[in-house]
Amino acid sequence: MKSTTIPDVPKEKLGLLATQYDILARTTSDVTGWRQSANNFYLASTTALAGIAAYLKDISWPISASFCVLGITICVLWSENIRSYKRLNEAKFDVLLSIEKQLAYPMFAKEREKDDKLQRKELTKIESVVPVIFIFAYVIVLVIILLQLLKPTGAA
Image (cartoon, rainbow, N blue to C red; front, side, top):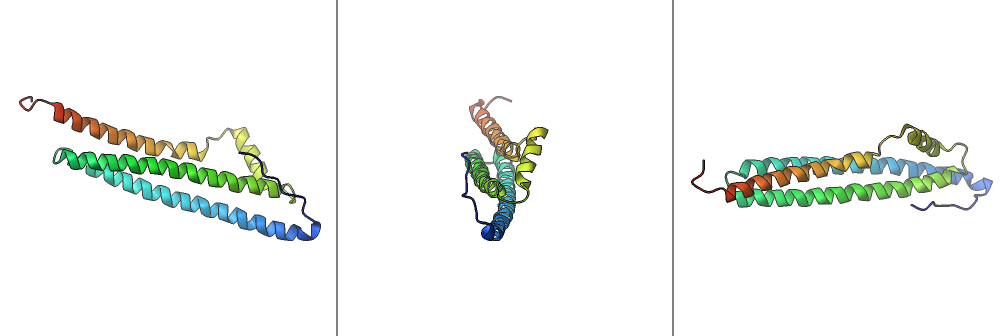
């Protein structure tokens, strides 16, 4: 992502810049809350769909397969949602880091430096694995359904 630069702010406007920085920092925190709420929704939805699909596989394979396809679709949307929130947070932090250059202490820049030294794995990379795990579970149920359909009726 390219770096955002802001022009030098006159001293009399530094207070306004600090206020804008504060607002942006708070909204960045709000985005994190929204992101977690969205993840909770997707986790609950996919868990329920996976359970229903697995339960129905022996009762009605078309309905079970439909739940699997729906679950996979929701997981794809979930993955895109995670990427979207990542891009939004990157944009917000880019602006915050630019503003910090004119403030007394670059808190987020220092945090990022420390994070880089610790080589901490990005939260987005970690949370992106969850929808993939669910997709894998749905595919397993679909394979089981397919194998049941292909199994000769007289076989034990």
